[in-house]
Length: 394
Image 1 (cartoon, rainbow, N blue to C red):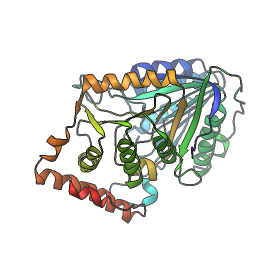
Image 2: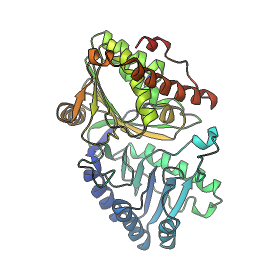
Image 3: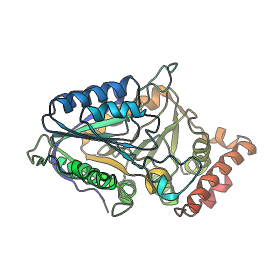
Image 4: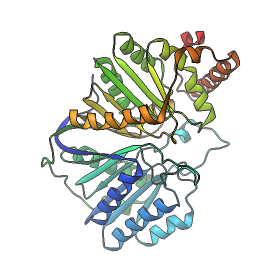
């Protein structure tokens, strides 16, 4: 059963990488008249961060009520002076769980705010996987992070606006910032802006713990022709793997576009532990090699799409606050599909089943040790799932 409430009459625009996203976000901020909400996991003190910060400051100085919510771990490198500069300009800044937990591992400290959301004047929203950080990971990188966001106008704003307000109120009360709650009250317009059917999903640790995963599983279970998933950090549980394998075995063309560069070694090798079983089911796996893959998107049957902040891994599906848009529209789906297939054909390497199986026992052992290290860490924190034992034949 689908978790997303489908709302008609929306205009959803695909934004690829920061090249599309940051100018659109800055323009929307500069056009704001009443209120801005911006949520991001990472807010960096770099060219992009300073540019968006300057836009927020300009808005606050002309009387717009500006709310910035950042995560305490994702943005822990952001200097206090950078934040103070915004506070001095009347930008309201809140930090979600500021404590850094390198040495004291506690379950509640792993519950991060991983959402990337912006709502301006309750008339336009942005969501996706793009943080407020330069597209290029390192100065020597020749390609930007491969990522997506969307802008949304239309009746779906009612749900998105309510979600950002609700989280802001929760964090503001926790920080004893009562005066920052409810400063402006806007009513999102119900007027149709387009003809797209869309929904909005969040993941939290209360009533919406499994909404995003259920939506994926529902769409995968209903797939008839094709599933394309591009995901930066891919470490699904047993049910998700079984759903993909079952789809492939019933004749659905399943394509996974995954991280080709090593960014986080433990995660990278753990993901590789799953390859054997997926390849045996007939799933095609491509690794993106032009730059760092950061996308969290999917297209199914050239109709159903999702774009958001949620990876398919334990962090996103079991711990973090996430937000995804779901769009049911063939034109939008084909636009995203074309972009993904271009990346598959021109910037990715196919993982061949025979070559994978011929790798050394030591290589496979490292992969499985990494997988079980992550699995048992989950178990200790109380979020364990049954290990995928049948993968051990890899």
